[in-house]
Structure formats: structure tokens, C-alpha cells
Length: 346
Image (cartoon, rainbow, N blue to C red; front, side):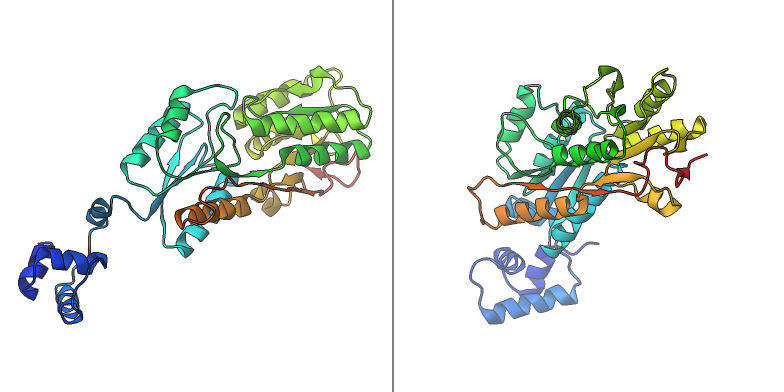
């Protein structure tokens, strides 16, 4: 049978209130009485209930983390950064995966409020351009700090950590241009999200700055999904005047693109050049030298969690902080124009 505080109070010869004050380290208790209660707690091997303590304090030492795709390695690294800082500060995490569903995201937000969490770190799924009144009302009425990571919510001023997607895409496209490419295709992300729009904007800017007209036939609208990118790449390979290079705007879409190229025995970069956004560690492990824009995902998680910790500790509580990190372009040869030094995926 589980030991209760009533058992402790009875054996120590004190009131339930005294035991509660000792357990919660609140209120005055004589040192002699405190030691007596602690001795009984140890003898009975009593473990306080985290749920009961949270009810008494009306909060927990837990924060919520909401991501749109837990299987995506990018978010795995973001979560890694979040977890490191959370552990350093004695915080637990409840992780929610929305599967890029606004309905699941709303449900996650409501469930987390019922768990009396202290704050939320979220990569929002809800489209930035859609005024989702229920979504905004849910966020604004929660009464707890919210930190955004790699995704904005329009009409709000939440704290957040972001990456400079325009700069990353500009540099990726410019690297292809410097190699001699003029027909550069792009597989975009979901265009109602700010990261996808900014990456497309960086691509457009690089073409403009190098006097290359934007050709709509080389723009392929994706949705961050591997299957969609696979189908789009298949369509690209059927084109009579296909691009000599492709810029793929997310890691999961890169996997779909590579699958299609592999099936058609396309050589990178002899047959087509490729640059992607976000590192895919498994490609590096397997020796595929694919050039990529490296977003500092672990650092984003760390900074987002530290930002939340600072707010919880009343540091910068009334200051809106929005940090934008700079990505790195890692060139590994797949951007070349018909290079003989290629890594065939045949």
C-alpha cells in the first residue's frame, strides 16, 4: 500500500499541514519538527506525487513542446537542444506532434493547458496568412509564456528564434549560378508558411541579382513532404527543357527528390546538380556529397528553451525577443556543372 502524508503525520506526531509545509518547503516549521518529519519520510520511503504537488502549487515544472513532424531530423535536433537546456534547469518536457494538422495543434494546446505547464515552445503549423481566430484566441488566453521556433504566427508578437531563410536560399542559388547554371529549378515548401516563402524569396533574389529571368516552369510547389517532392522530381525529369540544377527547400523533400533521381539512374552532378536546405546526417554517413544550407537546429532549440527559462525566472519578462540565426552553406560538389568529380547515385 502506498504511503500517504497522513501516515507520515501520524508516525511523526504532527499535523497534515506541518507535513505539507515540509514537503513543499513553504511556511514556518521548527527545525526540530522538520528533522523529525524528514526522518519519518525516509523511514517510510515516501515519494511525493508530482501530480499532487502540482495541484497544490497550481503549476508543474513541466513545459510543452509542439512540433509539426517529430520524424523529421531537423525537429529531432531542435528537440535535442531544447532538452539539454531543460535538464540543466530542472524542467520536464511534454512533447506533442501535430503531423502538420491545425486541428491536432489546437488539441495539443488545449491538452497542455490542462497539464498546468509553465510555458510552451512551438513550431506552428497554422498558416501565417490565415487569420485563425480560434488558434489565436487559444494562444492569447493561455496566460503562459510562448516561444516560437522556426515558424511565425501572424498578428502576434510572441518571443521566438528563427533562421535567416532568405540568406540561406540566396547563397544556395548563387552557388549554383557561380558554377554556370542558368536553368535552376526550385522545389518549394508549403507556400502558406513564412520559411517556405522566405526561401523562395531568396531564390528569386539570387536570380534577379545575377540578371537571370525567373521562369515559372522551373518553380515546383511542394509541401515539405517526401512523396510530393518525389512526384515533382519525376515531372522535372520528363521535361524537354529541364533545369540543369535543382534547389530543394527542405530535408524531407530532398529524400523524395533523391529517390526519384536514383530510380531514373541520374548522376549528380553530371546529369543534374543539387543543393538542399537543411543537413541530412544519413547522407553524410553514407558518403553522398550533397551540398546543403545548414540551419543551426540544435542551437535554435537551446536558445528557444533558454528564452523560455529566462521568462519563467522573470528575466526580460516584458521584453519581446526575436532572434534570427544565420545559416551556413556547405558545398560538397553536388552544385557543380557537369563535373567529372561526381557522386553517382546509380
